[in-house]
Image (cartoon, rainbow, N blue to C red):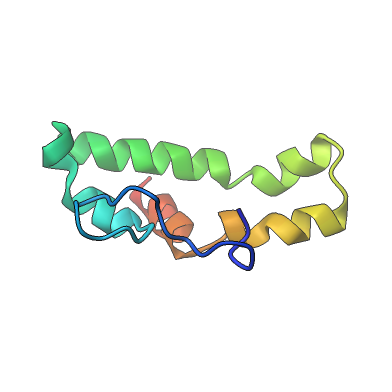
Length: 87
């Protein structure tokens, strides 16, 4: 969801206290979900790679330039950049 519609806040807290949508926070609590840090980082990198093409996929599916621009804050943020660095 675009950040002007709803802030990047989760309805369920990742670490039982903090509901900020944050890749860094998610990686800090991977043991709680019985994931190895290495695997969690690989998953984040894979998701980042998939999301990196969202603009071209949206265009391919027929969204207009204004519709794509409207959604940019939902996909283009620091967490995506951090996920891409993991790959």
